[in-house]
Length: 219
Image 1 (cartoon, rainbow, N blue to C red):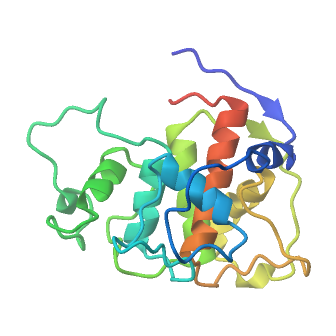
Image 2: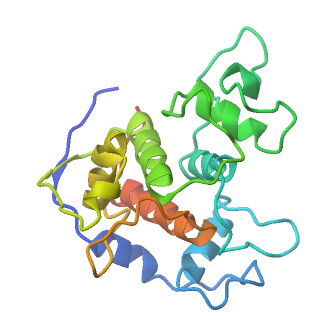
């Protein structure tokens, strides 16, 4: 496949264009009516990206775990095993030593591991993810899966720079340039804040908006 490089300056227009749609679908969860990201969660559910807790709730304020985050990422960007051949049926523990092969998230972990989207071999599926954790793995996965656009990398200063994990800084900078994340009014990123499921869903929505707006090609 011939690779195409795009040089862009991203704006919030692409996200606005996505959120400006009329969402006519029924609300699938009983506990999202009063949150700002409700429409985004509904659309992601309708697209098969998000799943609830099996009891009609989404638990938007619940802290996202690594397993839930991986599931969101591989489902959001159609990361599959379709183009990969195996000598034997893969198992989650082939890629992640702390996984369980009969766990609900095993399929997502296999898809993530087989496609090498940047997750560590010692990933703990049950560990809570912070905002910087989810941001780093989301951006790393997208960059491993797509021919991402070149962007203006003028550094964005944050008021809580000292709190950032150094290895995550580049991905966090790019996430802001891609309009997947943003600083708050005090110019803080809050990297160590444990991320809620609703916040993770909103970042996933923004990532998919980028893919659709830029018509990004899979590598």
